[in-house]
Image 1 (tube, rainbow, N blue to C red):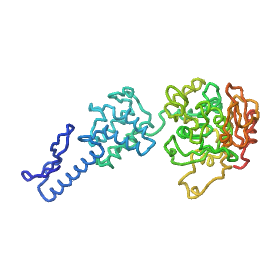
Image 2 (image 1 turned 90 degrees about the vertical axis):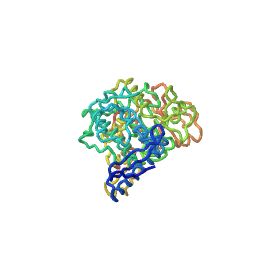
Image 3 (image 1 turned 135 degrees about the vertical axis):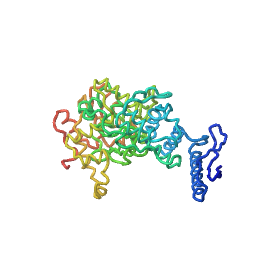
Image 4 (image 1 turned 120 degrees about the vertical axis):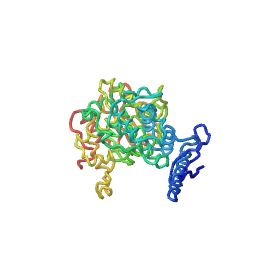
Length: 476
């Protein structure tokens, strides 16, 4: 309900809104507008704007009485993003909970308790200054954020979450304009917190070989580390990879179809790409499918099963998709066991790409496998599709072995290490298989035979310390 009334030559505009208690009260939104045709038009425009704002708040608030607070809008906003299946919603929720909604401002109020239409750029700037100086003061249930000084990248991540939330609030009609208008002068440069860190964010070739073979590392995590390093996959891509995405009958190397990160249905770059399977990774995946996965899950895998889910533990049930925070804790423990310094999981992908380039792979061809075809550089890029054997040749240049090494022995495909394999599963693995028996307590290493002769030559030359031959020929 709204009203315009005149008094002593002036116009007054008022609306009747419901307060927090549910009781409707009159509230003036414009005082002392000149009583003239122009003044009445201005008053009507103000009332229409106030009515639109009230409807927007009722629509977004889901029955909440009175103006929305930032905390109430954040709940609605996160729920909508989750319904849309946006991949960033989990990080957005964490960013808001830990570093925004519960932060106490200098004026004594908590940021999340501000009315959304009362948030000003000065409030956003105050948050950013706290992030950069480590003067965050926590309220409520988040005392561990107090005193944290965030890295430049984290500052930009949190600011981008706020920017997206206020942008959608403006679209919804809850605010007239977004308060997130800061520039690099307030945010600072988006650079590494420690300028020396990036040069050390990489593993050596020997460290990769330890992570994928050392008996102190559980079998499932060896497979996951191999997917991240030799397969050059991001964490979400490796976690969401299923057996149906592995085509092992292609020549000269098998193929992984990278189409999704976790269960999001898309990769980080919205680009589906095809990654040749290096012979060492093919050997690991073959044995894992024949023996390791059935031992962990108690049944044979199907095309819809995750290649490397979590095993049963106190924290996760068997078969659950891997998530980043748990993987970080397990990797930290594995590095400690091996006596290696801490590094990120993403550094394994960085290492795999770096080693391939160091071993002679062409950068432009390798990029097609690890990042997808380049877009927008020139028209011809959109028309270019490289032959499969050309891409395989670049990936196969990676010189990596799985230690400890042992004698090469041929075994029947359907009775590897005494594990019974159904006929359908055996046929999926190809017409023949090779095994590499090593001095490891549970280790019979299976090598896919789609590249039998070349793969055996690669392993043998690596054992002798000679140059790895190219299983795809000399073309590059």
